[in-house]
Length: 394
Image (cartoon, rainbow, N blue to C red; front, side, top):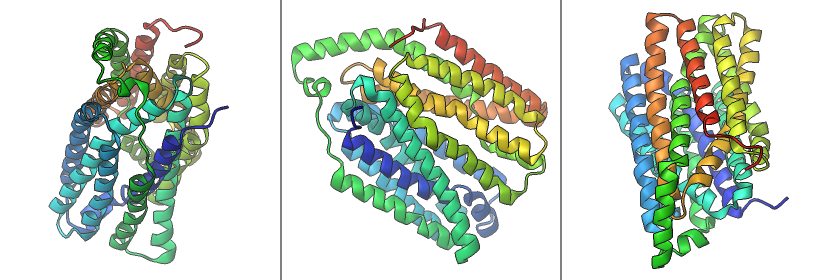
């Protein structure tokens, strides 16, 4: 089996470092805001909603910008650097508006790096390896999501650092990752982007863009958007577990168990999608999501929630890498940044809408109604994928 490109490996390692830093802070941020800075739950919702909305919009523009620049590296480096810098501001904050500013800086970084980074992975990776490449990247990202919370628990409970000191500590891995990108990331022009100055190549790219974005690409985005409506914030799962009696101290262990499965098997699932039609992985993943999501309201014990949180990793393990590889396959030459920007914009906006819908149903109808609605939307997304006429092989 051919080795992954050095750029893919480097971006995976940087993602691991950045996510370790991010996940050290994320579980602590609500407590830091409420107990140290005196923020209310409404303020927390304002901070997270505004930050995520900004990131989703910026992902579209950053992807298109990287296509016009002909380079991805500057946006990727700046994106990770802004994320590292934002953590310094969070740690130094004395009032909650500074945390809002820091979260906006952090999400700005995420917004400007995500689409160019995925486009760069697609640029350097042959089509027959894209599932493996994106699966590998997601695996290291989830490894960071395991390391971060466990490291935070260690320094808080064993070393005895304060919340503020722990947040300062989280600056280090993110800064190392940004530095590695500056020194080691080599961006090479492939045939698709290197030929963009040629007039005939531009004509072909224009025609390809029209065909893809008007047919297969649009259908893919529609299916992914439907699933994103189903995929509301995982905070509701933690809320459901806590309401059923799982203690606050055990919630990080539930979350870590979830990410362990993603970390272990995402690369294998992505690699498998290189050998079959990638959409079959999406059908399997999103169908299992519907079943598992509908089961959450029936869990009432710690053992049941551990089983469900482990099973809940399966849909994402199966679908995350293949989903991004599918977008890369459909993106026309010279338009990969824009294509990933559209993908991230649709995904982000629909997750926000789905989270709002879930919250209304959860509070005003019942948790079961909210989970069943999510399951039904996931099945609708499966039907949308099936409507694209799957084949046995790519």
